[in-house]
Length: 101
Image (cartoon, rainbow, N blue to C red; front, side, top):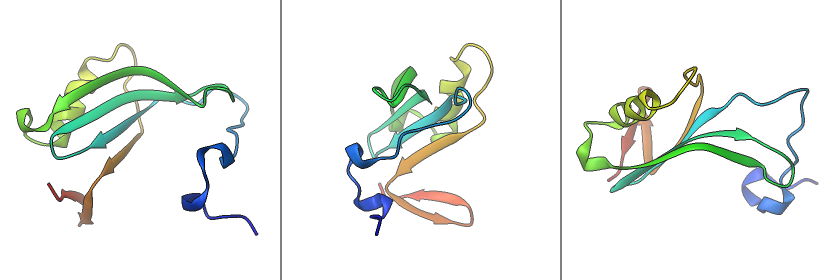
């Protein structure tokens, strides 16, 4: 029986396969002090993530996560990414992330 994804180690992860390149997307890790935001894409099997752009923000210097993401996106060349993945300690109420810190 396969293990749930939450119990697999990084080396157990299934390889990314597909007919073509994966569209870059925003990945963010939001903490109480800093928000780390990157533009990433899937790469080769020996390097599953390709970091295209990265910035570290001081949360207290921005009104909310939307302001952080808007600043990050404004600094990117080319087309705006359509998708994002955000990791944040907290919970969701009515579609909004409520940050515990």
